[in-house]
Image (cartoon, rainbow, N blue to C red; front, side, top):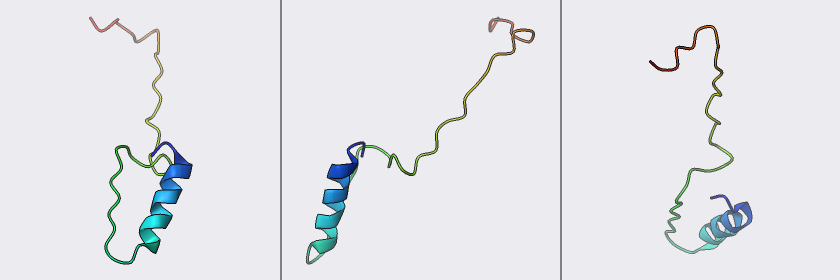
Length: 50
């Protein structure tokens, strides 16, 4: 859900719906996903993946 406004609207509609509501998202929540750690190259130790 990269469009937070649209996601928020969908969640509100689901909560207001009288009955069972299911939301299926195509991507992980941008607010919950932790960024992957960054990598750095140490030139002295780099062998160029040989």
